[in-house]
Length: 486
Ligand code: ADP
Ligand code: MG
Image (cartoon, rainbow, N blue to C red; front, side, top):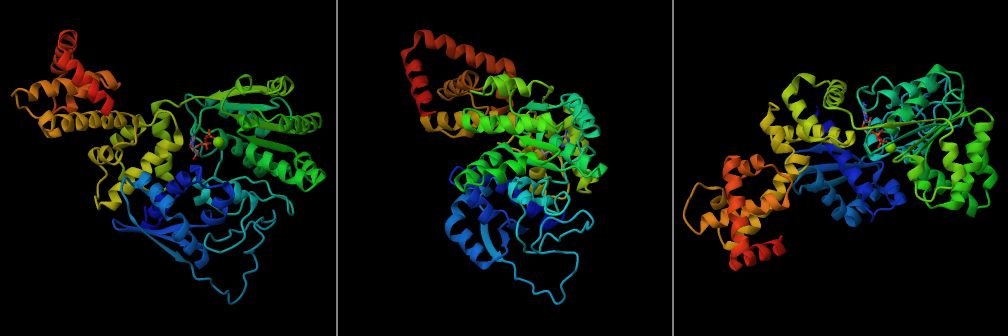
């Protein structure tokens, strides 16, 4: 992976984190962050490029704390940040097919708008999540000024099919082949990061590629709600209704956002009816089944259940590995990452594909940042410390060790050592006992973190303290005080 690509990779993860920060409103994020880009990253510094000096000054003065926090989250350590503005290029001769302020490219002009060119953002870009920014290119291209908001990156071809998503994939494919007929509405539900948005957009992209001139609209439910409120306040409801009703395929992402919003449910109900009665295809995603959406009116719930409901569950290990392989293929760096490393990463992230892909980027970034040429299993373990699930257990064992050591005024290394003098042995028993009590870690894992002791030794420590707790007030008091510190 090239340096700049790596920098951008890290930056996209940081942007994701920033976007989730409650202190940053959506508008603020769109205004200040969405057109930024990292152009370089080394051990000492990251350089963020914006399209205007005003924006870079603003980021530096107003947001540096939040940005630093995000970078620490991604990189695991603080880093110096530099913000620079890209010099505006004055084109000598205006290229005919690269419009700078008409983001929607007409169907007949499949032109690639260069990423670097400063230009007004399309709605599609504004609604994209940060992790999709790397794919900013012309959005799906439809007739005249109609914008579908689709991200062309999400296709059926790059969706890895396996246990957990096979049925959803097949049904989605069937819908794209014959929209508005058998499976209408299609309701896809499942946990975060499992590919719902990807599949939903793949339907839109596929229908578009088939070229039947269908009007396709992708919208997050949140944007639908915001659009409604905006238009309501401007007395523009006719415009709003036309926008959502004069289409052939409506893709509404994350419908759980309608929970408890009765006026919005009412509006969506009418939109739904209008499209449905006219044989238009609706695809809806949600993080739960309709029956579990809080305060959803019955009539809307039953409509969601009219067509077909399909869930996506966590893909199995092999599928997760295949997803990583595909990502590596796309980045042309397959040979650099050995299979055991891929397996390790896949085993560490078993509930969210977004995090799984983030784990891989982290490992690759780590090796580049620290100048390690080979990506080995040891390096992957090191890079993912504190990020993946089993490493989180290590963190809490480590925390217990630290608190116990400072309580007794000794070093963590003493706890892990082979020294067999009292009272150190007793302190070690206490630390081990607390790890067993307070973490989900196995005896083997605890033993490993205590200088490689075996599970019978760990069991012995636990039993010793359990016995003492029944009779010795002193031990009871110590355990209680340490727990309070923890
Ligand atoms: P959700 O909408 O369910 O939260 P997304 O569709 O946003 O999840 O998926 C999160 C990320 O994981 C996206 O980058 C997506 O491309 C990727 N992803 C999820 N499932 C798969 C899959 N089966 N094959 C390839 N990529 C996947
Ligand atoms: Mg989604």
